[in-house]
Length: 138
Image 1 (cartoon, rainbow, N blue to C red):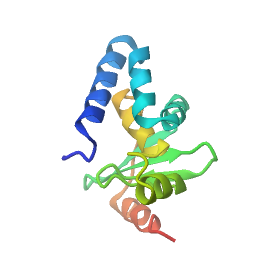
Image 2 (tube, rainbow, N blue to C red):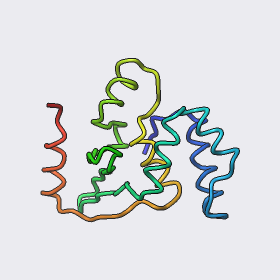
Image 3 (cartoon, helix red, strand yellow):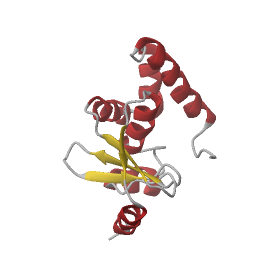
Image 4 (cartoon, rainbow, N blue to C red):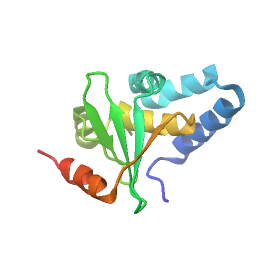
């Protein structure tokens, strides 16, 4: 699957994955790199990962969506395949202002996958279709 992220970010996630597998923690230099690349969003995303707020929904047809329970209690359905989150921060910061690569929810998905702490849930194709149709913009 092709990635939508720059190579430096891809390498950062690979480094996080490797060190987390070996030590069960993220080294300070990688935390500094996360903060440098993603700003305050990095700390917020790490908090979501610590709270185990990321769930991967998989359907028999192979479709995947990620649900992230945000700090406000809202559940955001994110799609890595098209690099999308319905949260206001993604719309404003990433799409409108072009000031960031990701919102904290999508970053939490990438980090939880790199750290292998993503919750897993199977859903039917019908449930996935309903989920996909309910994420349309209001």
